[in-house]
Image (cartoon, rainbow, N blue to C red; front, side):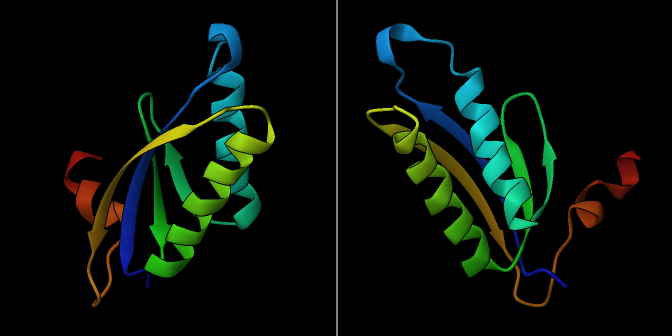
Length: 96
């Protein structure tokens, strides 16, 4: 079972005020390519997995933003670390 839930909002600085959506799409693509269980929400994406693996995905997301033309990136991150295990479903099951 996963030991962490991490929610991230990526805010790339774009050239000349370009739309950030193509950048966000690329960030989500990094998550998908890593095979991480995730849910995309309007203001952030939540991932479920092992803490170190999720931190690596965040590193790659930030690097990808720079690769595609962002001069810098703000990443707002929320972390729930629970060594005995945690899933997104456990936190939301009563609302389903």
